[in-house]
Length: 588
Image 1 (cartoon, helix red, strand yellow):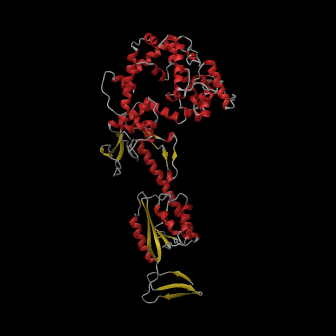
Image 2 (cartoon, helix red, strand yellow; image 1 turned 90 degrees about the horizontal axis):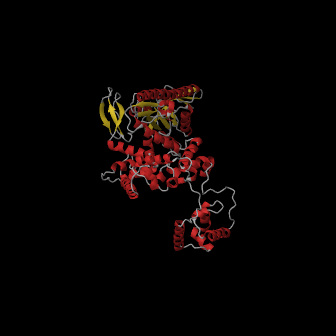
Image 3 (tube, helix red, strand yellow; image 1 turned 90 degrees about the vertical axis):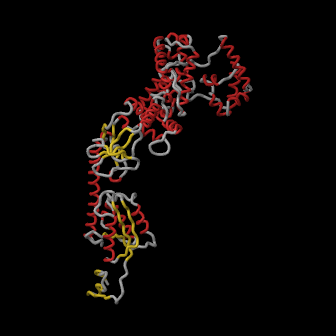
């Protein structure tokens, strides 16, 4: 028996049996049993002809006339049909349909496009086949074809799927073209406000309507959103961030901690982070340029970075900070991201070596134009590899194939030999002679140096070291001091004339308002203080020849006031105005 066409709502059925048509008449008062079905409703974010309510109304009229009874509804309001991951309603339907106790036997959808606009038509067919295999075939209520798996109907359904996907592709290209046109004239497209700026709603004549608060968007199609400079307090914080990062060489996480300690609220979120600081340092809106189309995500696919020639760059306002300060921060970020070529990194370290005459980890990290030691290690493998490129050997260097003491007793014997020869043992002696084991090796084997001294039978208590220090001081004053290390300034003696050294002191005094030995050591471009002492006899004599007239006590008090002002500003406290306020603010 083969049922030709069910006549739901009527008391008779027509079927084929035994080579002839037969009619079956139901008893009076009986009704056919309706098949339980689930309906799936979806409306995209774009404007659609049929809303969720209209779809439900159409399916409600379709179901009883075709023998279906709606028992469950799955809805995806305002979701695109390009992917499955953003449609919780369809995911729930597919999860329920494969359950053994599924409450429905059919799935009703308005048309093929409501099921999805997948860019691969086979993806829509796979989800439909999953329902068919689970015993709940999909019925498209508004389509002209019957979903009966015939060749003609299957071909027509596949054409409908391709048309639905093509509609999304054409619409995506139109929307992107319109967005690029709006960005070229300086209109903001999507996203929340940026720190230091406000979003202003304007009409079709670019007349301001109102300032948009957090979460507010435009309401009319003829309105647009533009950027404007925000509160002066936020602009001052932005300038402080650039000064701390570019001039003071502070890392981003340290800047975030300082802002949190000062109680400065960020634009979004409860606290500052290194990522928020990085976003401010890379925001070209600070120099008046609005950048659009850096990245794109066509048709809900993976997000990709666009080449710079595809970016839209439009000048929308006057710069908030100088271009020089912005480029300096960008250069340092590029160095920290290890995007500096190897030749440029080596050249920057060579420049520092030429200025100072020696290299240390702290000196490299504090220099504003060199990559950090961590970056150099990742790029060259080790810091010693960088020194090898420059031909530099420091006092910590050990040849890679040098024979080391085999046992602890040999290391203790070396300590006894040094004590018998020099009368004392110190870290400077062990680290200054490449033929001796360094202090790191002793600490590795004995825990600390005093343990090695005690096991070697040489003085190791604090009073013994203090007594020996007094004896060395007397010998040094008597001219009997023995130098155990090579001075660092000797390689720079022929690079600077007396006039150039005095000019270095004058420039340092003009920049900071004072000159001390500590300040000379911290400046990356200054020769070490030992070179001034060797050339002029003392730093005080060098100050006098440079025309810097001030006593030693005044220099120290000036530096103390500057250090106190810096500590006060770090705590977010007000600084009392004084005659030295100009110098304090410049140094900080």
